[in-house]
Image (cartoon, rainbow over all chains, first blue to last red):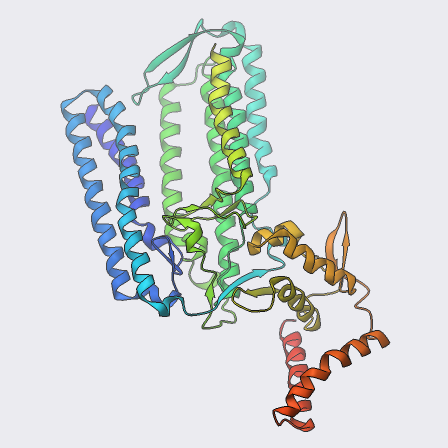
Length: 371
Length: 132
């Protein structure tokens, strides 16, 4: 049992490792370690080497983390493995930030020493019809998980007398209950209300994908436009499937309080769905790339290209190449520079309102319902 | 239609924006009645100040290129752009005079100047056809 658990947990560490190690290959080719570069420089031997070294360092770090995990969970018990696992993931993600920083600084220095890399005039390109082309799937898809949640709430209220006097609210990695609360209407409704919150979060993410700034490559606007639209659609679909699936599984777990669904079946479904999503996300990152930069072949029609212009160089607004801080930009959401997905403009007050709102609800809902 | 703004150009951003939209209409890449992005979304996509986009839209509206309505937002004038009238002819003369004067000073004759004009005219037509 213990060995299976260790193997299972290691397998779920893999996507975390992959998604850190492969980032330099997933970004747009006009960016390298958080620095704007002309596209033809992307394959410069020095920069190729830099990517190789990054893979080496972050890969070795992943190896060390794996060793620590396997060793300690082998000598410890399942409980240690359970505590260690999230801790090591956090350690790896924070550690990889520190691995990234010297690479970013090296890239900046190189750029400063290569005047040619920023000699071309800076151009902003947009298409006036971009937002009329259905760049994401509709938010109406979230009606489905919303209905699941409503049904769960109604069923919980009807079945209330049959719910046991103690309600489990926390599980460890092996599926054992580690925390119980006394039954009350509020505690019985904790999970369904959190489900509502999650539906809203998924809806919000889909909205971010739609609203995020249009970022089109000045050298290759036609192609870049198509790539960007496919990129958004694919991730939008991913978010809708993720949201609907998870809400459905959460509904099942809640109904488990009063219906007898096989625990093993439920656990199996959750694990299978998680593995499916992680695999899908990795495949999307490899095949689509940031902003659609890795999309190949038949879906992309080649269009007019122009040489000797560069996308707007806003390096100075990207602190460490990761945090965008630009007071003069009215955009709230935009593509990450180092990674796949979107980030926010920290200089925009709405950014802060949203983050505070999300956190307040995340802590507030359990706080009020568990009292 | 693609809009390209140059960050280093001496021409202010709002006037680049105005000129590109007019060019878009001239090349028939923007059709009568076609919607333009809202001021906010265009400003966010371009990453420039809302006032800059607003100024450009106001100027386009004043000159009859676009209409701005509360509900529909901004769109290309559906009845077409007002035809060149006397006032426009006068404005055209005023803006051409210094340009022609400079060309004469630099030794360009009437034929080569008109040829340049023809080239520009036909470049607009060609682009208009290829975008269809």
